[in-house]
Amino acid sequence: MSKTLAEPEFLQKICDVQSAVGRVRQMAHPLVFTNGVFDVLHRGHVTYLAQARALGQSLVVGLNTDASARRLGKGPERPLNSQMDRAVMLAALECVSLVTWFDEDTPLELIRTLRPDILVKGGDYDMQTLAETRLVQGWGGTALAIPFVHGYSTTALVQKIRSNR
Image (tube, rainbow, N blue to C red; front, side, top):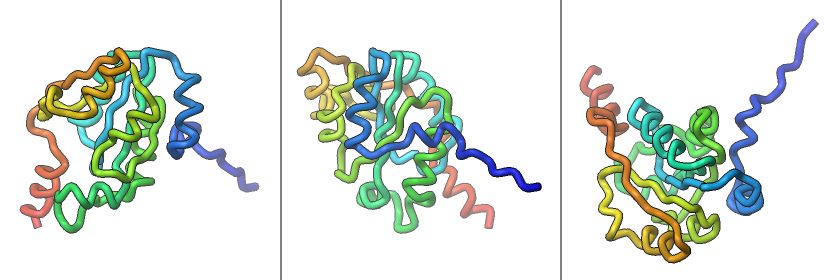
């Protein structure tokens, strides 16, 4: 007798922007927002995401679509994983409350739509130069950078794999 397995519950954390708006309203606040490609999930990513979540009650991740990620110029073969595969990996993390996408070059419109209380970026950003910072601070929110866990990056990982061929 075969048994049908239910779809993993964490897949419910993935939704389009229109659905995200209503779901964000129901989430516990303060709401933290971060974004990125998260192409090959590694220790640096999960540490960063856990630290971001610790700043609030809910964490929303804005994921670059495949087209948006390609425009970042990380290489012709990037992203290695599709946007749905990257979203599934993020949604499986306990610290992530919701995953949605943005197709623009920056998450500015997504942030304007979701209105997070706290914007978090990686330590390589000068937060004071970002339009996203000014936007979030405009409604009384906070924007801050979390230092990187040194020695971890998808680009470095891809280079390491290629050099071992």
